[in-house]
Amino acid sequence: LQLSSKLAVHDVLTNIYNRRYFFNSVESLLSRPVVKDFCVMLVDINQFKRINAQWGHRVGDKVLVSIVDIIQQSIRPDDILARLEGEVFGLLFTELNSAQAKIIAERMRKNVELLTGFSNRYDVPEQMTISIGTVFSTGDTRNISLVMTEADKALREAKSEGGNKVIIHHI
Image 1 (cartoon, rainbow, N blue to C red):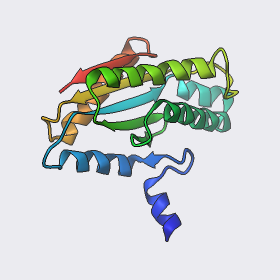
Image 2 (image 1 turned 45 degrees about the horizontal axis):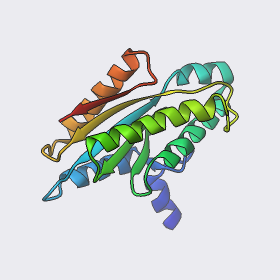
Image 3 (image 1 turned 60 degrees about the vertical axis):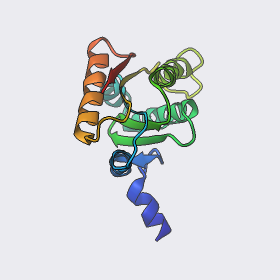
Image 4 (image 1 turned 180 degrees about the vertical axis):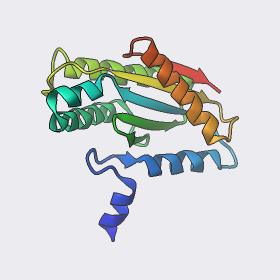
């Protein structure tokens, strides 16, 4: 029973939370009587489909697990990291301001670039980069659709500007 409970909210490959847990967490936060500053980030691995096509799914899986490890090292223990689909991850942060959110996002972006590039600590076939779309709120919104739409817009903007970027929207 304990294993099935864990599987219900965790991604099997990466062992982080899954889409269901992430969206339940965001909805739970937005339903609180008082919502303080929070941030949602969407992270996309740039060129991931090409990596899978060129090197195969086994290497693609290794890239996913490696990037999850790098992101986990870049965030606080209570922050929520989830695999939403394929190479897209969601993060939920509470009790931080916009400047702190930017610092965390840039740290994740730089760490992925550095640890898969020059030092290649993870032994992946090429340097990886990520794009990060961030939405920061002072707690005025209660609409999960608005939060996720703005985060997705920010992510698409980061990717359209060539990737390996952090874009922050405020709502």
